Length: 373
Image (cartoon, rainbow, N blue to C red; front, top):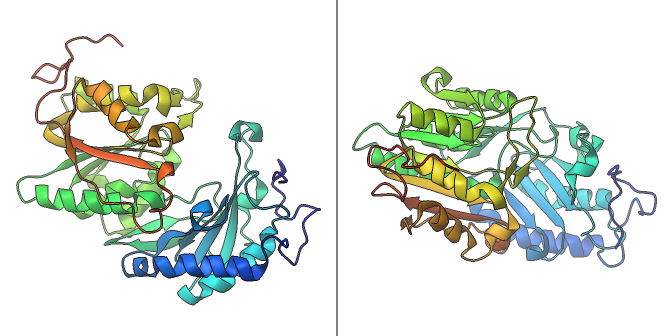
């Protein structure tokens, strides 16, 4: 199978520009997309953003299609699509299939096996306002998810500003906080907050939120999301900090949170110049849970999730939690994976748990018995 070339040319010279390869004619792709979309139609009653096609789980390895209201992104994993896969023809087929639900444009996001080879440069196709198929869309779109609106950008780089696999967990957090609010004001700490979608779900239920991220740009995006939902950003906290630095600060200031969100990337190279620590979920996740538990209010809830393949294996994330806490917590049942991710469970894992007492190594007052790391 040919590999997508490093420059991510959407129309490599060996690809026929108007037809799909014999192994995947347009009629076959249209049939696969139509079947996948039919299974997902019930989602339209609660969200405008969902995964319409999920790679091998829907019959075509390495090809994914995410819908965001009037636009969609066609994601191709390097080296995975069939031989002579015609990206442009696939985009046209996707547009034809998705036009029935109001999609007007298909943009492309190539996924590299090793992003370090990009040298910090984004493939030009990821920032082009011209879609592979359909009509150009505005730079930003507002999509509706459950009871809130979120800003997405379909040609702003490799991501869009929203992680679709967390959709039902955001609804879970919203409903959990709504129950807590019946008793007292609720505080939530959203680490690795990105564009603050979890914070929006919590704030819509009345929580006072703190969103932590190393990127000022994404925190500004998060503030816009607050404004889009008629929420005053000034009533909430946004901290441009490394998550571990913030957790240390919160511990020192005796800050406690009723809900903590841990949704880190799989890895990050970090930056000494910017004061950003390198991060690896495999190496650092247990320490993250341990540090977060120190600022969790008694009876509070932690939602921990990951897309790191090794941590998505059955029982692995649970073992990281137990290793971090020194004992099993009180597990909280999360929603089952939604229909658009139900067939692709090895790419996403999430757990929720509560601590009714201080974890091992933490004194009742919240200070660690040992500060050694």
